[in-house]
Amino acid sequence: MLELLFAAALVAAPVQDEEPPCDAYGSDDSLTIGAAVSPARPGGEISLYANEGLHGMIGVPLKCFSGWTSSDPAVTVAAARGKIVIGRDATPGRDVEIAGTLGARTVRTRFRIAPSEGPVLTGFWSQASVDCGGPIPRDPLRELRFNSDGHFAITFVPFEVRQDYWGSVEFDPAAGRIGFVVDRGNTVPAGLMLKGQARVEGDNRLFMDGVYFGGLDAAPAAGCSYVFQKR
Figure 1 (cartoon, rainbow, N blue to C red):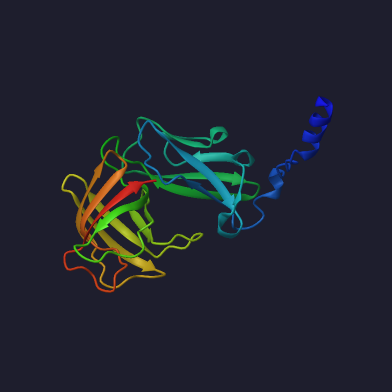
Figure 2: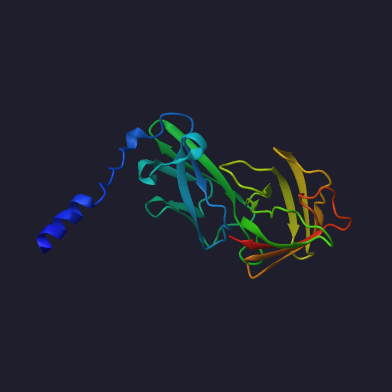
């Protein structure tokens, strides 16, 4: 009886697809590499990934790349672990370029070294609450993305790679001030209020006051108070 059950389990077990060979990747210009959108602090690590295909839907094994290089000697690539290693002597505020070669294609990604300590916005945040002193937007701001290079993107309803609008941001944690400038967007609401107060608590809670990111028929006179949770 046990033998029959074991045989049945073998038959029912799903067949694992073999991983394609490395020469199956990198045949067109869709090949990219990227660094995780997270603080790259000296002495820390951030994840490294590679993708190709429409919207980068196909993951590419890092073992298929060769000749990894870094523009900063304090930053190295540990491809076997899928990590970018930031040395303790890395300089905060410096931009770093990582390059890797797959076959005849060399692709690059860039990120900025974060401060050794103190609040950093880099990452993905989702709205936890909002108070506009009256009506509040029907849809919460589900994705507020801060890149390490001082750029942001806002998306109320994430779908694939679509974003509502994006631009640059300046954050002064000492003064508690934040300011956004919209560069472009697919949907840019009217009446945006993009200068206000901001503070980060515990690395994973972001409070902003006096700003308004859209979602109402008319902008509130004094902006809104938002609380965001880091994802």
